[in-house]
Length: 419
Image (tube, rainbow, N blue to C red; front, side):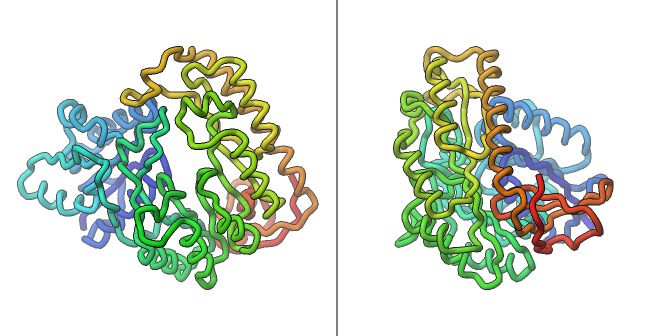
């Protein structure tokens, strides 16, 4: 029996795709094993320069660790750097952000002729959505459903639209089919994921993200649907109505801000200003007062003055976010921002990131305190054998630890929240 192993770097989309490929290999008789595998593949990341470096390191480690395996490199880093990988690292098979459904056939071809393959596409802007088949990828009780690929936003700091290609949506029927299968397989929570999920449906007829969300919420026995990340401009009236009316839509929205300064937002080529952003948050909180609102913030964007940074700090407080994901700006060759003057000193970036990380801790503590003494429903996700506690999350993503006897994973338990 043939064996395979894999490494998946970066985002949940990469994890989804890696597990989908694993499922396809299993259909061909493979089993997962780290013990002398016949095939070892890595799904790479290129979201930052550090991610590029880690991708190259992991490819080399994989080749060294499994000298007898057919090593397959896929994903964003290989899309953008396939010539370097082919000439300097020399794995057996290289694909980028398309042709991944051909990998099992490419492996069989390599087994026959031993000829290295580079099947990266020269122009990722014109990929079609690549259906990888129904996957069972999950974290025991939380399953991920990929609904689209690519992005058309072209934020000035980001390489992803060039590497992943334009926004293209998975068919509505395929999304519903997989979501239904996941529910029927016992998963209590589904997380909608993709590169730019709010753009879902723009390339389909009479379809958008809110319509798909409503249809998934209508699936019988789906306990909870969570949205991974969505832009402010794509939260429309229909989605806000769903927030208000549907108890199985998670009370947690991750809405990227990136900066709280209108001048920086303009340089970033973001599609909103502070006034629009804050107005949307107010509508969401009106529909669901206890909602958890989290965000992404980039510090040290080219030209970001101390005044602009402090403007961001004050705007975050005004928005009353509950948690921040903070990223120091990473220069990406090939982007508009890489050519901008006044690149910020790394030490300044680090100081600004530390300021926001500390603010995030304060905001999260403040949010959690609101629920002390209240009854909350927890989806049990794991059992901590060492500390004898059950661990899970609420709809608004509060982590809850329940001591005592082991509770079956996937159970829904109501408890009084204690911090």
